[in-house]
Amino acid sequence: MATHDAARRPAATLPRRRERWIDIIRGAAILLVIANHAIDVPLHIADVAPGTIIDDLTLYFAPFRMTSLMLLSGLLLPLALAKPRGRYYASKLRTLAWPYVLWLVIFWVATENATEWMRPDGWITRSWLWFILCLFLAYLAAPLLTRIPTPWFVAVPVTLWLLSIAAPDGTLFDLAYYGGFFFAGYLVAENRHLLRRFDTTPTMLALLGGSSLFAAILVLQEHGLALGGAETPATDDHGAIERFDLIWVPVVLAGIAGTMLLARRVRGALDDARQSALSRALQYVGRNSIVFYLIHYPLQIVVVKLLDSWGVTAQPVMMTACILAALAVSFGAVALRRRSRVVDALFVFPRREQLRPARAR
Image (cartoon, rainbow, N blue to C red):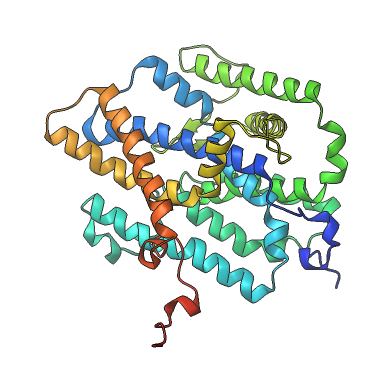
């Protein structure tokens, strides 16, 4: 039976080096996630509501934050599938399953829910770790689903999006809706040679303009404007889409595609030319996205609880403190994990050779 494993594809179809523009988008998305939670955590922990403008900005980016992260992961799926199957699954256990379990325990401690581990459904979290869980399960399914020939593979994301309509709110919806974007990313990777003709400035402007218009209408809907009967995407406590109308899928895809074309035009994203400070910063966050993603949410909970106990309840102060604390600790953790096996083990399970005690000399 014919397969479509990346290991059997010509090497020319796979990226030859790390693509900086992907890190730029991932870094920007992670920063938006941190900012979003810096608004949501004070609201749900201390009942400190954001202002209308801040709330509108959060809603404007809501359809694109997590979907772009899922699609970019799918875009890199061929590289992952090029590994032998044993290494592929071991890698996902080390880099996704392990931090999911570890940080779920940390989350229980931060929220004082230490008995949560005794409930079977407590291990299928709806906290910020839902993204790690969905990504892990998508990777588990990928070797089987990618056996579908490329012309027919479009049915995979489309089927998942259709299933998400009937799926109940929660994990099943997340798996279907966001899984659709993961496998859409794989479809893009498989057809990059066909899509290069659309890598033009007019195409970028049309995609960004159209998706921006719909995002603006999404915000206006919250203020009473109707859009031809289309259902406004609802978001959960973490700013992720949890209910939507199918009209939003092509809108979100257009926004992500336009952002991809824009990121490729950022100075230094495609070559070794001198990069801007912003480009370097976004790439740094993007390369270390797992650290920033895992740390920020439970840390923000602790920060809000401390400020609330001290009587500091001004929303701008709480939001700023949440953002600065998340960035400071995350940057510190990135630096420390290069020097400490213990810190590194917070984000990836140690390799076998790292677990062996050093031999005496």
